[in-house]
Amino acid sequence: MRAVQVPRPGGPLELVEREIPEPGAGAVRIKVEACGVCHSDSLMQEGLWPWLEYPRVPGHEVAGVIDAAGPGVVGWKVGQRVGVGWHGGHCGYCDSCRRGDFVTCQIDPQIPGFTYDGGYAEYMVAPAAALALIPEALSAAEAGPLMCAGITTYNSLRNSGARPGDLVAILGIGGLGHLGVQFAVKMGFKTVAIARGQDKEPLARQLGAWQYIDSQAQDAAVELSRLGGARVILATVTSGKSMSDVAGGLGVNGRLIVLGAAGDPLEIPTGLLISARRSITGWPSGTSIDSQDTLAFSALTGVRSMNELFPLERAAEAYERMMSGQARFRVVLTMG
Image (cartoon, rainbow, N blue to C red; front, side):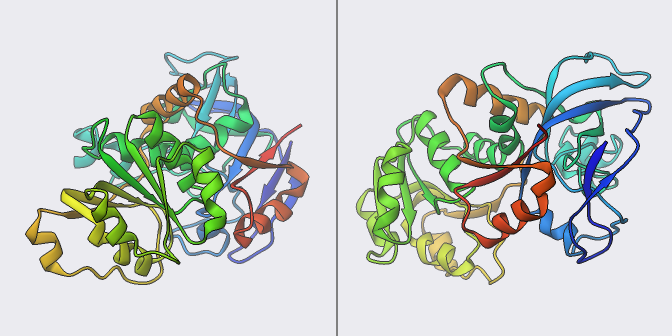
């Protein structure tokens, strides 16, 4: 099979030929049809994740078809369309797993493209516990990015405490944010999109946003307060300052949910939190059934990722396109 691997920390993405892997006990082999290129892949490529082993095949936004099943696999069969996301398996016996909180596994969290070879390949092997069923209404290229960017925005919003009719703001309209706006709208929230520049407003309106705030020309916190205060601000940007600047727009019991991994600190006055029971929290995607819920909701409501497609042999170019920040909005590899 063809696969794209990173040979060493900081090494190039290189197209190689490998033996087609065989699934072990409790695992399946997936004939990959599409795989999203996520910014988190850079943590592996640059060697920034602990305990990595090289060479490693990246990719944790995988969509394909079960090609073979190993011993002990129950509930899945050859020919089913499945996806694999950030949650690629768990130990099953740590305190988190015993409570059913598999995505926060404390002992052996499994991540495709990090702890085992991922989806930048024509075939991959994954634990059956990591599989999500893909609805027929979604193509493989549509499903791939929903396995990470999609589940992260959908799952954080549905667990945010916001109810239909509540004011929910999406900070940033990029790879995460353009999905966050769509999910918020389809969940019935009064959705406000916040981004830099008036040029983003047409897209925000196209995605269904009720209001748009240009954070370059307006004080987003003030504008949100004028609208009654946000029940939730979903922060998809990678700027701690931008998150800090908008936190004042939270209403009573409002929550700032952080999805973007910012390099600079988040600085918020303690009085702001105390005075109206405001809070800050993060959200780490979800488990395989959460991914399946994301896919089903997207198929039902018409939520779709906006993608740029590249064939597998152009994976290095696709990766650079993603890292440039110029992609609109997700980059996806297709196997042909």
